[in-house]
Length: 109
Image (cartoon, rainbow, N blue to C red; front, top):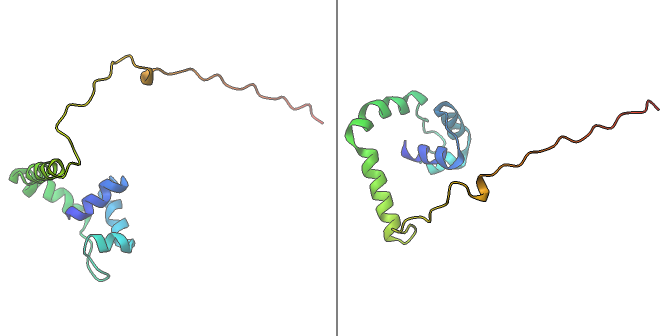
C-alpha cells in the first residue's frame, strides 16, 4: 500500500479510486508496487479503512516520516539550516493587470 501512495504522491494522483485504476493499468506502477501481472490491486476503500483505523492510532506514519527525514539529513539531501526569509511584499507577490486586446471588426468583405 505504501508504494501505491508514493506513486500517487509523485504523479499528483490524489483520488484513491483513480490511483487504483492507474496502478491496475500501468505495468511500471504494478512493478514498482510489486504486484506483478496477476497481483490484485487493493480496493480504494482499503486506503480509507487503514487511514482511519490502524494507521492513525499506531503512529506508524509519524515514525515513517521521521525516519525518512533523518535518513535524508544523514545522506546530505536535506540540511538543518532555516530557510531564508522572504518579506511579504516581495516582487513575487505582486500581480499585474492584463488588458484585453481589442477585437478586430470584420469589414464584411
